[in-house]
Length: 542
Image (tube, rainbow, N blue to C red):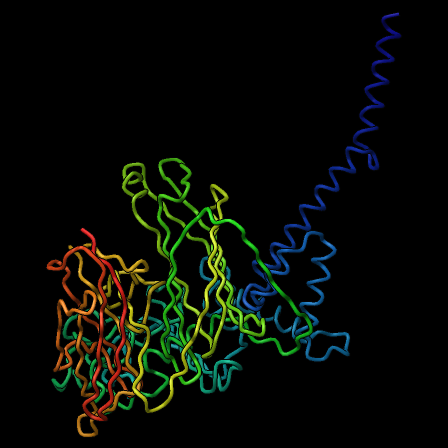
């Protein structure tokens, strides 16, 4: 009887093993299904975050993320490549084949501890193809500067200059400089020709022609622009090209980060977001900076009180995370700009109590044409799930030629030359300055009022190639002038060229009472006799 029971139990065990683990049984089918789903999810994630990360538009990314089934996503991918196929009537998609050839090429040529497609040279090659010409200095060393770089001899880090005859949406005769300051093979796209100069911070070494002649000082160099950015006459004598001016290089730098234009558009996307509550309050400011006749730079600055955030402790660090999304639409509903980013605020356990009383600030710089737009911004506190939203109207001004005009009047928390900052700056960069706006416009008495303003179409004296501006900074309480600074000699002119004059001024607040004030800036051009006035409100607290 016992032997018989053991035989039955053994047979039952064999049956269960066969039932659950042989192909076709429910357990094995579920396991295979899970593996297939994981494999499909990984494929779609890799396609979005690696394969097409440089060419997919924000609108396409938003639509793809909204799809829920593998069948829908696979259909989207097919349509994505069809939209870019130059010869849709043939069985071969030349664009797709060339695109993956470029990825293979950069991974082989530009890898340096990480895949080549993640490098700046890799991104440029994948997006715009091989350059028409490459000037390569793989070992750095002695270098004779070009005339428009100021002349003279210096020593450089390894660098390359890529030249394209034309890039659609960017322009003709495009030059892109990549520098390897760490000698590691990691070339980074440079904003300034000065970045390749290994002797930039060595006193008396690597001088430019005008510096050797004693007609300029190395201390006056801008970390952003070639030559002496404070001397337009110097720039003119050195033959600086228009495309080498700081804001021209900044415009090109932003343009190179955008996905290339799609020539074959057959997908129409509308994105609508409705938020009916606001549990995450924040403040926002927008400013307007002229880049060209039809290009406006729009810094969008967001400020959040840390007290409204929920922080999560990870080891010894308190971390607050905000997901930010913004979209700019024209009056006809066309999406002209879109962005999404993660704002992270971290404090150690010691600094956390004080950090809760501080603010998190974030800036996104967009660029579009003059006109009337609608800006929608939505923030989400990842830890709490609270949302905050803002909808506002943007009126990007159209700057005419010949008429004295200006940018937004920016009241800043701080204004610093980039040359004085030890590390690279990602946000708040305007030309060769880091300008951090005071979004709330509320200043403590112990601080100074930092003022930033750009003036356009100022006349230049033909004998000195310099502007002749008189600037008056007046602080008013109501209609009464409480404080005034008259800059007759132009000491607040930080930079000038034939396109713009940059004004930077500081006003002490120590002698002001707590209350509401207005700042009124009046600019008079003594050469053409024109005048402009800009005003901004601010508060002073104890």
